Length: 224
Image 1 (tube, rainbow, N blue to C red):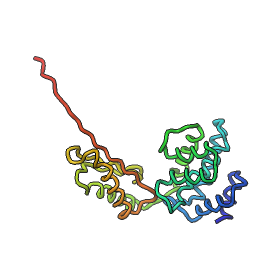
Image 2: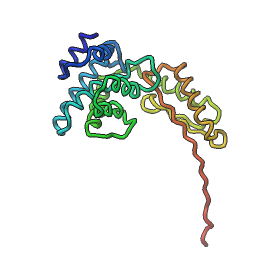
Image 3: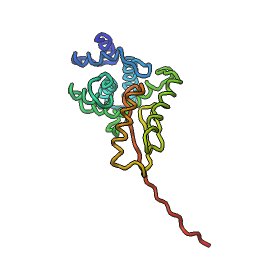
Image 4: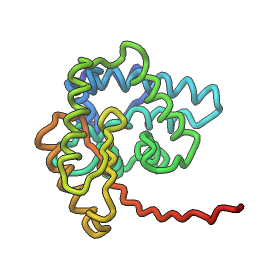
Protein backbone atom coordinates (compact mmCIF):
# COMPACT_ATOMS: atom_id res chain seq x y z
CA UNK A 1 0.00 0.00 0.00
CA UNK A 2 2.86 2.36 0.81
CA UNK A 3 4.52 1.67 -2.56
CA UNK A 4 1.25 2.36 -4.40
CA UNK A 5 0.84 5.76 -2.72
CA UNK A 6 4.50 6.68 -3.16
CA UNK A 7 4.01 6.06 -6.88
CA UNK A 8 0.78 8.10 -6.81
CA UNK A 9 2.51 11.02 -5.10
CA UNK A 10 5.43 10.85 -7.55
CA UNK A 11 3.06 10.82 -10.52
CA UNK A 12 1.24 13.97 -9.33
CA UNK A 13 4.35 15.78 -8.09
CA UNK A 14 3.93 15.60 -4.30
CA UNK A 15 7.00 14.81 -2.21
CA UNK A 16 8.21 14.66 1.41
CA UNK A 17 4.88 13.68 2.97
CA UNK A 18 5.06 12.20 6.49
CA UNK A 19 5.19 8.40 6.44
CA UNK A 20 2.11 8.28 8.68
CA UNK A 21 0.11 10.27 6.14
CA UNK A 22 1.36 8.11 3.26
CA UNK A 23 0.20 5.03 5.16
CA UNK A 24 -3.24 6.60 5.59
CA UNK A 25 -3.47 7.24 1.85
CA UNK A 26 -2.25 3.69 1.23
CA UNK A 27 -5.66 2.36 2.16
CA UNK A 28 -6.93 3.86 -1.10
CA UNK A 29 -5.40 0.85 -2.87
CA UNK A 30 -8.23 -1.37 -1.61
CA UNK A 31 -11.01 1.22 -1.41
CA UNK A 32 -13.58 1.69 -4.18
CA UNK A 33 -16.38 4.16 -4.74
CA UNK A 34 -19.08 2.88 -7.10
CA UNK A 35 -16.50 0.58 -8.67
CA UNK A 36 -13.85 3.28 -9.13
CA UNK A 37 -10.58 2.64 -7.29
CA UNK A 38 -9.66 5.58 -5.08
CA UNK A 39 -5.99 5.64 -6.05
CA UNK A 40 -6.88 5.83 -9.74
CA UNK A 41 -9.61 8.37 -9.05
CA UNK A 42 -7.27 10.51 -6.94
CA UNK A 43 -4.50 10.42 -9.53
CA UNK A 44 -6.86 11.31 -12.34
CA UNK A 45 -8.55 14.08 -10.37
CA UNK A 46 -5.24 15.60 -9.28
CA UNK A 47 -3.91 15.66 -12.84
CA UNK A 48 -7.12 17.30 -14.04
CA UNK A 49 -7.08 19.81 -11.17
CA UNK A 50 -3.46 20.78 -11.76
CA UNK A 51 -4.13 21.33 -15.47
CA UNK A 52 -7.12 23.54 -14.67
CA UNK A 53 -5.14 25.49 -12.07
CA UNK A 54 -2.42 26.24 -14.62
CA UNK A 55 -4.98 27.43 -17.17
CA UNK A 56 -6.81 29.64 -14.67
CA UNK A 57 -3.76 31.01 -12.90
CA UNK A 58 -4.78 29.53 -9.55
CA UNK A 59 -2.46 28.27 -6.81
CA UNK A 60 -1.30 24.99 -8.31
CA UNK A 61 0.11 23.51 -5.11
CA UNK A 62 -3.08 24.18 -3.15
CA UNK A 63 -5.13 22.46 -5.86
CA UNK A 64 -2.62 19.60 -6.06
CA UNK A 65 -2.84 18.85 -2.33
CA UNK A 66 -6.59 19.54 -2.21
CA UNK A 67 -7.19 16.93 -4.92
CA UNK A 68 -4.75 14.45 -3.38
CA UNK A 69 -6.45 14.56 0.03
CA UNK A 70 -10.06 15.37 -0.88
CA UNK A 71 -11.30 11.82 -0.12
CA UNK A 72 -8.94 11.02 2.76
CA UNK A 73 -11.92 10.82 5.13
CA UNK A 74 -13.22 7.73 3.34
CA UNK A 75 -10.58 5.56 5.00
CA UNK A 76 -11.41 6.74 8.55
CA UNK A 77 -13.67 4.02 9.96
CA UNK A 78 -13.65 4.61 13.71
CA UNK A 79 -15.31 8.04 13.80
CA UNK A 80 -18.81 9.33 13.05
CA UNK A 81 -19.64 11.87 10.39
CA UNK A 82 -19.36 12.23 6.63
CA UNK A 83 -16.13 11.53 4.80
CA UNK A 84 -15.81 15.29 4.35
CA UNK A 85 -15.94 15.94 8.11
CA UNK A 86 -13.52 13.10 8.83
CA UNK A 87 -11.19 14.25 6.09
CA UNK A 88 -11.07 17.78 7.50
CA UNK A 89 -10.30 16.43 10.99
CA UNK A 90 -7.49 14.23 9.66
CA UNK A 91 -6.02 17.07 7.60
CA UNK A 92 -5.97 19.32 10.65
CA UNK A 93 -4.31 16.57 12.68
CA UNK A 94 -1.41 16.46 10.20
CA UNK A 95 -1.19 20.24 9.96
CA UNK A 96 -2.12 20.69 6.31
CA UNK A 97 -2.46 24.34 5.16
CA UNK A 98 -5.81 25.98 5.79
CA UNK A 99 -6.37 26.55 2.07
CA UNK A 100 -6.01 22.81 1.45
CA UNK A 101 -8.34 21.97 4.34
CA UNK A 102 -10.93 24.31 2.83
CA UNK A 103 -10.69 22.42 -0.46
CA UNK A 104 -11.44 19.18 1.38
CA UNK A 105 -14.32 20.76 3.31
CA UNK A 106 -15.94 22.27 0.22
CA UNK A 107 -15.43 19.67 -2.52
CA UNK A 108 -19.05 18.46 -2.22
CA UNK A 109 -20.37 21.99 -1.64
CA UNK A 110 -21.24 21.22 1.99
CA UNK A 111 -19.85 24.70 2.63
CA UNK A 112 -19.79 27.73 0.31
CA UNK A 113 -16.66 27.92 -1.82
CA UNK A 114 -13.98 30.10 -0.23
CA UNK A 115 -11.55 30.22 -3.16
CA UNK A 116 -11.11 29.43 -6.84
CA UNK A 117 -8.89 26.53 -5.76
CA UNK A 118 -11.83 24.91 -3.94
CA UNK A 119 -13.98 25.28 -7.03
CA UNK A 120 -11.29 23.64 -9.17
CA UNK A 121 -11.01 20.67 -6.78
CA UNK A 122 -14.79 20.22 -6.88
CA UNK A 123 -14.87 20.39 -10.70
CA UNK A 124 -11.95 17.98 -11.07
CA UNK A 125 -13.66 15.54 -8.71
CA UNK A 126 -16.88 15.71 -10.73
CA UNK A 127 -15.06 15.20 -14.03
CA UNK A 128 -13.15 12.15 -12.77
CA UNK A 129 -16.16 10.55 -11.10
CA UNK A 130 -18.68 11.44 -13.79
CA UNK A 131 -16.82 10.67 -16.99
CA UNK A 132 -18.14 7.70 -19.05
CA UNK A 133 -16.73 4.43 -17.78
CA UNK A 134 -15.37 5.81 -14.51
CA UNK A 135 -17.93 4.24 -12.22
CA UNK A 136 -20.31 1.41 -12.65
CA UNK A 137 -23.17 -0.11 -10.77
CA UNK A 138 -25.85 -2.58 -11.73
CA UNK A 139 -28.86 -0.51 -12.75
CA UNK A 140 -31.34 -2.78 -11.00
CA UNK A 141 -29.33 -2.62 -7.76
CA UNK A 142 -29.19 1.16 -8.05
CA UNK A 143 -32.96 1.47 -8.55
CA UNK A 144 -33.66 -0.97 -5.73
CA UNK A 145 -31.41 0.96 -3.31
CA UNK A 146 -33.19 4.24 -4.00
CA UNK A 147 -36.57 2.53 -3.74
CA UNK A 148 -35.66 0.89 -0.42
CA UNK A 149 -34.50 4.23 1.00
CA UNK A 150 -37.73 5.94 -0.01
CA UNK A 151 -39.85 3.10 1.40
CA UNK A 152 -38.09 3.40 4.75
CA UNK A 153 -38.80 7.13 4.84
CA UNK A 154 -42.45 6.65 3.91
CA UNK A 155 -42.91 4.01 6.61
CA UNK A 156 -42.76 6.63 9.38
CA UNK A 157 -45.98 8.20 10.61
CA UNK A 158 -46.48 11.76 9.47
CA UNK A 159 -44.25 11.49 6.41
CA UNK A 160 -46.10 12.73 3.34
CA UNK A 161 -43.38 12.34 0.69
CA UNK A 162 -39.84 11.00 0.55
CA UNK A 163 -37.24 11.50 -2.17
CA UNK A 164 -33.79 9.90 -2.45
CA UNK A 165 -31.53 12.31 -4.34
CA UNK A 166 -27.85 12.54 -5.29
CA UNK A 167 -27.68 8.78 -5.93
CA UNK A 168 -29.04 8.11 -2.45
CA UNK A 169 -26.55 10.33 -0.63
CA UNK A 170 -29.37 12.57 0.55
CA UNK A 171 -32.94 11.87 1.56
CA UNK A 172 -35.49 14.66 1.61
CA UNK A 173 -38.52 13.96 3.74
CA UNK A 174 -41.64 16.14 3.61
CA UNK A 175 -43.87 15.78 6.65
CA UNK A 176 -47.48 16.70 7.34
CA UNK A 177 -47.37 19.75 9.67
CA UNK A 178 -50.46 18.66 11.60
CA UNK A 179 -48.88 15.27 12.42
CA UNK A 180 -45.23 16.17 13.06
CA UNK A 181 -44.14 19.16 15.14
CA UNK A 182 -40.88 21.08 14.84
CA UNK A 183 -39.68 19.50 18.08
CA UNK A 184 -40.25 16.01 16.66
CA UNK A 185 -38.20 16.56 13.49
CA UNK A 186 -34.76 15.78 15.00
CA UNK A 187 -35.94 12.41 16.34
CA UNK A 188 -37.65 11.59 13.04
CA UNK A 189 -34.51 12.27 11.00
CA UNK A 190 -32.40 10.29 13.47
CA UNK A 191 -34.74 7.29 13.33
CA UNK A 192 -34.84 7.32 9.52
CA UNK A 193 -31.04 7.53 9.35
CA UNK A 194 -30.69 4.67 11.83
CA UNK A 195 -32.96 2.37 9.83
CA UNK A 196 -31.27 3.21 6.52
CA UNK A 197 -27.82 2.47 7.97
CA UNK A 198 -29.05 -0.91 9.24
CA UNK A 199 -31.17 -2.02 6.29
CA UNK A 200 -29.64 -0.53 3.12
CA UNK A 201 -26.09 -0.90 1.80
CA UNK A 202 -25.14 2.65 0.83
CA UNK A 203 -21.57 3.73 -0.04
CA UNK A 204 -20.61 6.55 2.32
CA UNK A 205 -22.98 8.53 4.49
CA UNK A 206 -26.57 9.60 3.85
CA UNK A 207 -27.91 13.01 4.87
CA UNK A 208 -31.54 13.15 6.00
CA UNK A 209 -33.31 16.47 5.49
CA UNK A 210 -36.83 16.83 6.91
CA UNK A 211 -39.07 19.63 5.65
CA UNK A 212 -42.10 20.85 7.59
CA UNK A 213 -44.07 23.62 5.94
CA UNK A 214 -47.38 25.25 6.82
CA UNK A 215 -49.19 27.09 4.06
CA UNK A 216 -52.12 29.44 4.50
CA UNK A 217 -54.05 30.80 1.51
CA UNK A 218 -56.96 33.15 1.04
CA UNK A 219 -58.90 34.24 -2.01
CA UNK A 220 -60.05 37.74 -2.85
CA UNK A 221 -63.67 38.56 -3.49
CA UNK A 222 -64.56 38.49 -7.15
CA UNK A 223 -65.04 41.83 -8.86
CA UNK A 224 -68.32 42.15 -10.76
